[in-house]
Length: 125
Image (cartoon, rainbow, N blue to C red; front, side, top):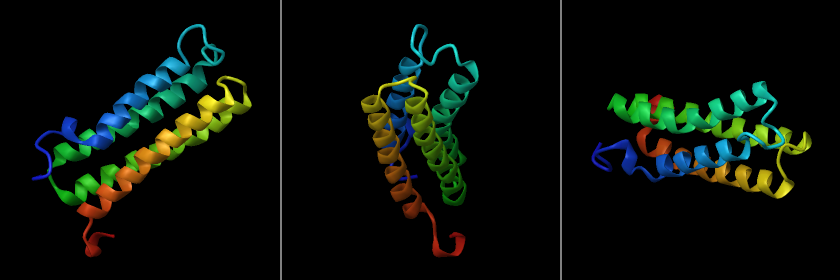
């Protein structure tokens, strides 16, 4: 892949990595949602899935495989956004925090979609 030699160079992976830290901090010990283990496990798994699927797809070294893993990562962005609606409704996070995390996940999803279009040929769409 001529555009990057390592997945760590990808801007979308870097943004996904930063989002992981933010989500973990939002549900760290002592926060309102911390005691809801099922919720915390689900949202942290979803946010980790974003960065991990970007990196796993990159390491496959074929455009079709990379695009497939990017699709999964993009789906996980949607899951994170959805979970922040629930977190807001359950008063686990403030409304402004939830809106910011949804916006960050949506921005990553848009970057993933742009990268996916770059790697997907009309025959594989």
